[in-house]
Image 1 (spheres, rainbow, N blue to C red):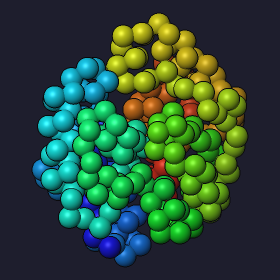
Image 2 (image 1 turned 180 degrees about the vertical axis):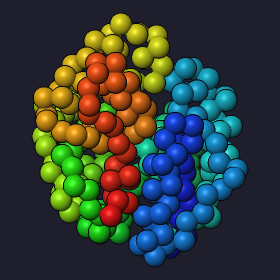
Image 3 (image 1 turned 90 degrees about the horizontal axis):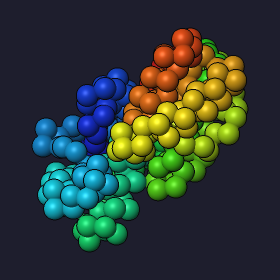
Image 4 (image 1 turned 120 degrees about the vertical axis):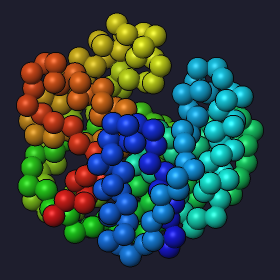
Length: 232
């Protein structure tokens, strides 16, 4: 399968290892992975900030750039959710490629039918299901099924797992005090889990939680799911 990798702005700037891991994993499974130079932002933050004209231009570029691939895979449920949900429902843009755009875990489990990717990660891990993965991209239990198949990984339950981390894009800037309060609860839950690592699908949430844990002096580290799945 010829797959277009949509790296996303956050991965490009802050979590390049997640994008590299995604490409490596897909190639190990026998697929051709292409990283188009023409890719850019998905436009989600422009939509959320009330700039649909700018968002539409970015959305149109995405459609042009990825239209010919068999599938488009991204290490971000937030961006995938924006593409599949906001493009048609807010921007009024319809294109066949939107339905072929998937977050990594849903692509592996729901499209390829793969749960065991041969990974080994001998650590205690808890999983934070991000808001967009639950409510917009709706990846279901695909990430958990993948984590349960990783050799030597001890998967620990995250208390109040479905609660937001407080990031919410511009919400964390415009409502900093509320965002910080939500983050405190999330970081406390992560630490109570007893995990060494907190995994998630979205770099933005990992950035938020990782910052909170670091400021609290916690030894728990954040990690993208793709980085676990590519480990051996």
